[in-house]
Every structure is written in structure tokens, then in C-alpha cells.
Image (cartoon, rainbow, N blue to C red; front, side, top):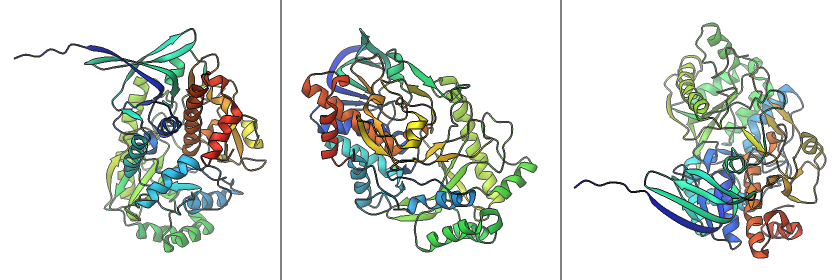
Length: 491
């Protein structure tokens, strides 16, 4: 008996539709549902959390104010010890802290219940499960493998989206839609204006594909670092050794002398899109992974800038870059085995399921947060939360090291609600790294704690708009701030 697929058409309704189940999206869905909305959460992959989980970005930066380094040597120390630091004021709490506490309770994160470190470490694999539990408990209807093929728009108002596969075409009609795709896909398809990359040439920050290496004898690696203080700086060496003795997390910085040696022999893999690298400004880091209540010093996650000048919204470009980055991961494993002590018998365990995209579209909202706003620590009457991350902008061509400028003023700035409202479009909110900022301010707001905070604000605002029977743009800001504050968020 032969069977034939007949495509089915259906229409589904929701109060709030969240498109994208990444770092911002899962929090938006939880917030909307907890505030009384019927929520559908769409995710094109097989897990929630996006780069937070499948992307193996295994630390939340920065739920605290982060200080800027005073010198090049101090920069090394700070980067090495952010994961263990409880210094400076914690600014982000609420759902983000609740999530961390749940991870701590099952040995899937390191730290202290009720607090977060400057760069909070966790197990990205267990994160998938914990996020699913939180979303389901909130009453959210989760759709995995959901590919959005169209946006339903009339009179500059978003009415929902179309989800489609070879078997079925589904129109999801929603009163309010939240774009948490990271790339601002729904906003762009609905006709919202957007900016892209730096203002001069439109180049975006480099991409990363995290990879994990196992079989590392980290004590041998640390012995090499200890015996080469001139390469790493005495202060960095003493800091890392102390953290290791105390069983605390730390970051291993690049082995620049080894990189220079490998470059001379043509054995160091060049990032995708670059013809040469400057060993003095190479950006990569390695961290012991936290699994089942302890650090695994033989299992290290690696983060490096791998692909330059890539439009992550272009399928062909992103495909070529992804294949290039996976090739680099394999060749970086070979570099480590040959050049870095402690890695002689190490092996590549896996590469991330999700590419780490730092920057693509930035949606133009009712207000655009600027570099000046961030560095001055500006307060706004429609602020939905405080944020104090350093400005982390990776250089577009690999010629310079990171920009790590500190937030001024009170040590934090407000993220205005208006940055979450795509200009000229109704019934649509945006959360995550593509909110309305300039390219320097985005170096703050793209990080995970800010994405979680904007996700919670959009989800809460959507639910309040429905209760008041107004559009998201007409939500009572004082009421929104009051509700967020009652849920343990600093305003």
C-alpha cells in the first residue's frame, strides 16, 4: 500500500507568540505565561537556550557590574577570575537568578544560592533540561522543529506567523508577537528598519563555534604557565594558581609564544575570512567544564574568534563560515596536541550545536541606546532593568584586542522599554541581542544576562498589554516597572 503526504492547513491561536527559544526567548515565554497569557514558543532546533545551551556559551555575563581593567596586565587577571568573582553590585536577579539557583541545586552550576558571579558558570547540557522544566511548568506550549516561513502583517501590525514543513502549514494567530530570533528575523520580515554591523562598513563582530577537548592534563598546562611568568605576567600566574588550589573556576588565556612558533611553521589555523593573524591580539580562552558538582580539569571548553566579515542572516555565508569554523576546531585540536603542554593526548570531544553569532541586525526601535548612554551610565524613566557589563566588542578584522570599557555613573545603565519596540510596527516586541542599540552599546546588551532581562520585560509587557487591552506601545510603564520589581528585578 502506497502512502501520499497531503499537506494539511490549520490555524492556531495564542495570546502571545514568542519566536525563538534562545536565551531571551525562553525567559520571555516564562514571563508572559506567569503573568496570565496563553503562550506558544517556537524554536527551530531541538532544544531551548540557543547559544546559552546548544552553543555551549557556558557562562552568564554579567549579572553584576563589571570593572574595566586598569592595564594590560590587570586585564589578564580580571579575565582569568571573573568566573569566581562575587565583587561589585549584582544588578540582574528575577528569572535569571531563579534559573541559576535551580542549576545550583542539582550540581549543574558553580557558586552560591541567591547570588551570581561576574561570569556565572554552568553546565550547558543540563541547562537544556532545566530550561525545559521551567518553561513547561509555566504552562508554555513549546513547538520544536518549527520553521517560520512567513509573517502575517496588515496595516503595519503583526498578526502572527506561518510555520511550515512538508506535512503541514500552520498559521499561528497571536495578539502580540515577540521576536527573540537573535537576528531580528520577524521584525525585518514585518518591515521594521534595522542597522547592520559597524556604521562605517557594516562589518559585524566575528563568529565563534565553541569546541570541547577531553583528555587534558591541566596540571601540566599550569606547570608550563607557572614556569613562564614573562609570557603570562606574574600577577596572572599567581591568580590562576591560587584559584586552582582553592578549586575555583578560572580562565586559561592564549599561549602566544606557542602561537608565534606555530605561525612561523604554518601550523596555526587561520580564522575563516582572515589571511593572517596578529599573535599579540589573538582572542581565545579555555575553561574547565563544571559537571555533576565539580570542575573537570581534563575537560576544557574553548572559545575563540573563528570567522570574520560574515553576514549571519545569509544562509550561504553562514554555511561556509560554519564549515570553516568546524575545520578550524579540528586543526586547533591538532595545534594544542603538538604545541601546548598537557594536551599531548587530548582529543576533540565535540563542537557546539549552535554557532555563536555576536552581531547581525539591530532593529531600530522607538529609542536607540547609544555608546554615550552606556558609558555615562544613563538612567531612563522607562528603564526595565539595570545593566553594568563592560563593553565587549570583538574587533572586526582581528588586528586589535577586545574593547572592554566600563559603564560609568552609578556603574549601571537602564535598558529603556522603547528599545524593545520596533519603530512603526504594532503588536510586536523584540528581545535579545538585536534590540535597538548602536554597535558599541550592543557590546553590552548582546550578553546573556541582558538578553534574559529584555526577554522578561517583553514577556511581562505583552501580558500586561493584553490585560489592559492596549497595544504594547501603550503599556503603562510604571505598572510594568512595578510588576518587574515585584518579581525581584532591580529597576
